[in-house]
Amino acid sequence: MKEQIQILDKNGVPLARALADEQRWRLPDGVGVGVKYSGQIYPLVKTAQGWVIRLGGRSFAQKACQAMDTAPPSPAPARLETAAAAPPVVARPAVRPTVRTNGRFEDQWLINAEKVEAQRAERVAHHQQANEAVAQLHGELAGALEERDRQVARARQLEADKLELQNRLRDDRRLQKSENTVADLRGQLTHAQRQVAAAQAEVRQARELQKAAEARATAGKAELTQQRQAATALEQRLKACLAETAKGARPEAWDWFQALLPVAWPRLVVRPESWDVVSRHCTRVEAVLRVLQALHDEDPDQASFSITDNGWREVQDHIATGRDDRLRVYWRPLPERTIEAVIFYKNDDEVQQAFHRALSRESARE
Image 1: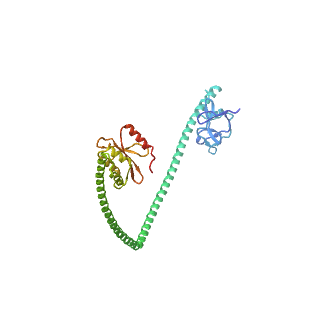
Image 2 (image 1 turned 120 degrees about the vertical axis):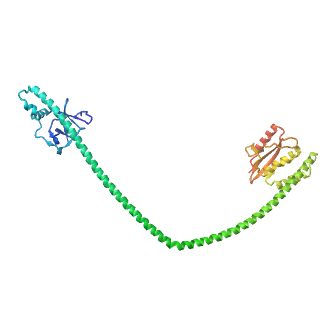
């Protein structure tokens, strides 16, 4: 019956299937004896559990090994044959122990010899692997040096080609520039002549515009002077009307005053009922005229705050009437930069809130 050889993986774990004792192979360089598994020759190692081969260890190609003539029925006789040539056995034949003792001694000697051979084989394998790695590194280094030399030569060639192209381009640009110089100068001269003509026309047009602006400014100054004179006369006439109204009679000049307001304040639309409020409650009109003039001129210092969602705002100042300061002015913007204003006299808070609600119910002016 053939002895079973246990197969260990790279982690030392036995595989489920054992290998039957078969043909032996002499490993190269006298490393030892091995068996064939999956096309490779693996060294035989004796352990306490029996003969094993390690898949994670070193292996040899079949062509590098030499087949032994006969395979013994079990590894033990092979070890006895190897041990027969050992000096200890030949030197003391007279004191050979019994067969059983001699078998144990030979087994132990073979185990030690195999351990030594395994260690030697491992050292030889490591040395061979190191030599192979060094040879591979030398080959890779030589290849890298050759590639570097090729890249350097290529870079030098590209740099030379670049310089040659730059020289050719520089020569071509010089030639083209010399050929186009005359045409460029002629074009620049024509363009300059056109610019001079256009500038002269712009100067003449600017002078005409300046004269027209000066004429408009002169007319505007005259118109402004007339408007100021008209406003002064209007204020004096309004004071006279208020004085006559205080006597209990409606003056004829009041209608004339209302008709003159669109001329004095063309951007300001004052509701007619506002002047009835002024005639009933005011003994002085300077304050209310100042507020209306500020609204007309869009004075940014004329503060106001919103009271409705449809655009009505209340002037923040409380306007003096000559007897108290209960006069209020409300206004809202209209299209085309016009302003609608209404004058109200505050008897108490309840009346003022009712007036605010009435303004909020008005539709927005478009």
